[in-house]
Length: 125
Image (cartoon, rainbow, N blue to C red; front, side, top):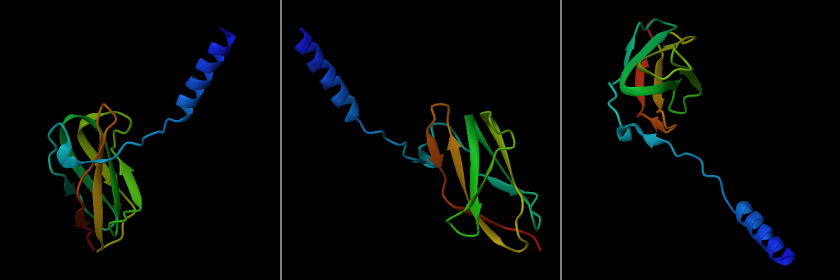
């Protein structure tokens, strides 16, 4: 019996060590289960912009942005920490007369991450 117990213990340990963790793969925004209103950029100045959008199911929203499609910076929903239907993301510290790229990152209640296509806006002088 003792030998059998050790055998089972070894099998359980080895099978547990053989598992690999799988990271969540971001999904395209077109696969989002709810509706997403196209984002629009309001209150553009030489240094700030406000990105707004609505979703039909509660989500967390973040925006990656930068002067190219590598982005390099991010901003979160002004109501960060809570899933909501209406999203307003303030971007600050921008440069005048500069074109910025941005991409939406939506996370649903199940923790699935959805990424939008690339969008652009240009700051005022």
